[in-house]
Image (cartoon, rainbow, N blue to C red; front, side, top):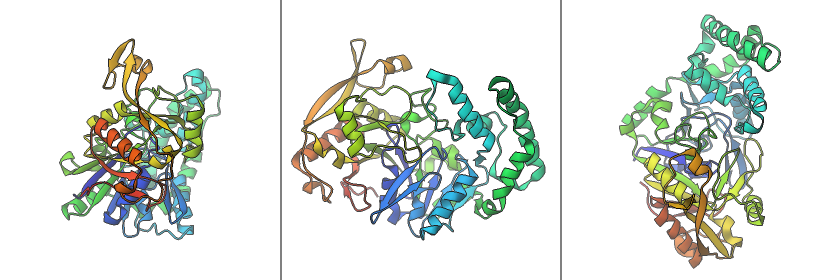
Length: 427
């Protein structure tokens, strides 16, 4: 099956990078289709940790061509810094391709992001302040700057002038900030133009040609289903479509080309930023999950909110993404608990909901309905087959599989590339 989509099935940080790395040996291309450097993937290879933000995870696998699609918003300075960092560690980045139609994050986008978030006060969304939302907003408002524009000074200048004519009014008159000069932005972009140029390609044509040749292509999302701007917990979402449907628009491939859709889900649940979270824990269990699971943002270092596994969300993710299977990660983190709750439904104003409530208000008031499973109280990081897992761990995995809406393909029992139990052949 040459075309595989990998999506987060919760609120992000599920371990998508590890899942991508697990598929690495079979891949020819690895393509990011949305998001920006507000996301992060942490991958551990032979004990060495790599934190990626803009670069596709497949860049760490020799022979794979990593691609940044048109649906991604790109901070060029961050991209080049990330490339240099990998080169210094001996990673070959020479195959990297960047879509000519991807939109650029500029300094005025990050400025607008930060001042707007502060201005919202208690109504803050919880953005990373990296300019992602304002860049997507400019894209939809047809005021964006695309990678190809870097190489046409006349068009670039016109676009920056048009953008700043509006944004400087906002900065000066509403936020009491200094106006941004057109020449300063042009100088900023000129500083990286020569380094960016060799990466630029018509990536839609490249990927479609690869699929025509039966090459294996992995489409890798950032963030996750519950942060999708259309299908997530709006307005506490990202500014793009991490769900599987985002691949078609974010890369330029048709839906008939996709063969397999894998949802990555943690054995518990985490969330970063504001917004409703039915299974969130505010007690010792929540802090223990955070510390044992090292639940701190790859990009921001922020503490992640922690809670128990939510099967309602998993079923929702299976539906809106058309998942063919799940990859369950971080099962090893639960080894310290004697009893493990799993949310199987919600109660909203005395009414049981087995599926996602329709409205934001209902979801905000949802209370988890739990079933409880016996823990296994032992280290499972050495297990490499399902049969090697403790009996209670096997029961837990099969119960989650039964209630989540799609079969489980693999189970992560540690951060390392080799610490994965494959349950079935996904080919």
